[in-house]
Image (cartoon, rainbow, N blue to C red; front, side):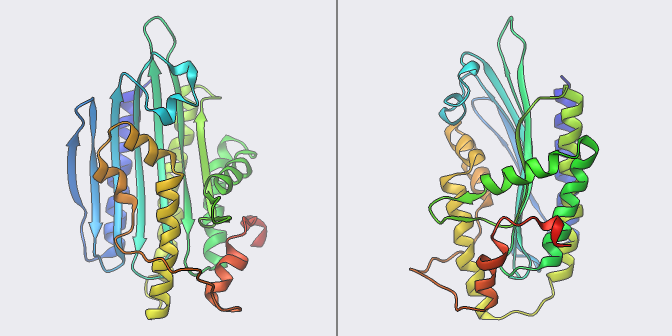
Length: 302
């Protein structure tokens, strides 16, 4: 296993994504916060706030290690008992100012568990997803086209499999609705050799900017008013609910004594909840849930 190569790639990916997002914003820069973890490892958090395009963008690299797995991991993988572990990855969330620009999330990661006298257990995971506030068919189709192209060199069955997994994973059971229009989600990836699996993770990580940046460029100057802003803040509540209730990465980070500031940087700076809100029929706000948040096969929509 070439763990050092994976780490070098992840740090480079963080650099390239931050550079592109700062360029797209045009008025704000990322601040960098290096941190260490007493149990082992550390990370590099980068946050852009109050920009012209992005209200908040966080791109976090972490490489943590320890002797005992947190409950969120050990409960589902009893074969890892008694093994030390390493977990490294890049995770990002972008919250735009303009309600017509979707929020987006991405992460790629490697997990390794080792015990003397035994073969290491490892797997890759990651993906990305899109959370619009006002739906746009062109954007949804283009987003999924890039996701499909990232998977294609590794097998034609991967995109539909990981697209379906994404739809299933980013589903708010208590709301009975998806968080957004999906993308890719994969985990426990070790069915190939290490180098091929690493290559797939890189293909997904490298495709994120190709998927997201054109959408930002097309929508960032769309006029909007208070109605759209208030709806954006309301829908951000769904994002917060998912991250705090269901997200595996959030749970793993908090239960492994990770750095709270870095773990919760995915949350938007402003959000609102409204009791029993129902959008007016036949409005763009109603169209979001009636049409876009339906687990659609976006490649067939083009």
